[in-house]
Amino acid sequence: MAHAAVVARTSPQGMQYLVQDAKGRDDWNMSSESAARYETLREATRAALRLPSNLKAFALPAEAAA
Image (cartoon, rainbow, N blue to C red; front, side):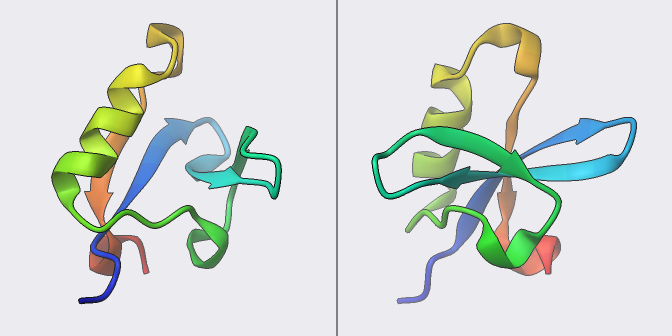
């Protein structure tokens, strides 16, 4: 099964997507192609909810991000 979901947030510049570097650190990027992918929407939602509340991140189906 393909990775089904990404974590995103809105910003004044537009949509930003959660990316993780090789060391597992989180960062934000404008490109949905480089976004961290999750197997299910539930996993992406859990990752979004673990972030600080001021980021207001949410899960998004990967096909909607493309």
